[in-house]
Image (cartoon, rainbow, N blue to C red; front, side):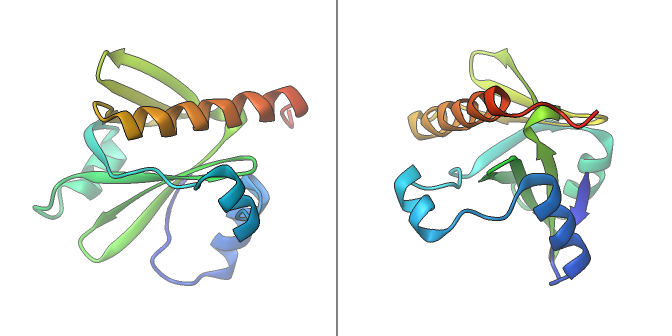
Length: 141
């Protein structure tokens, strides 16, 4: 689900909390060694996301925030912030080439560059969180 998260909208916040779980507490964040990714360069994206990214001439970058039941891929376009809410049970990750990963949900996707060691370390943390979640939870369908 692609949402505009620029403004403090309780409806969107509640939807994100129900779908992905509430944000981790400070104690949990410290225990995990952080929940946010470094800047990820966007190589390619679905049409809906690409139409937002081409509105300005800035570098196309995004970041990933871990949540208990999913992730939020955040990016900016013009003066607006957008989030792609992806629950773990719908998240698909593909290694397109040696230096890029593609994150899929329904009809949205984002391909990011993963050359840096810190990015690979974060992706390992994300995949471990996804595996832990899937071992303890069955999808609601």
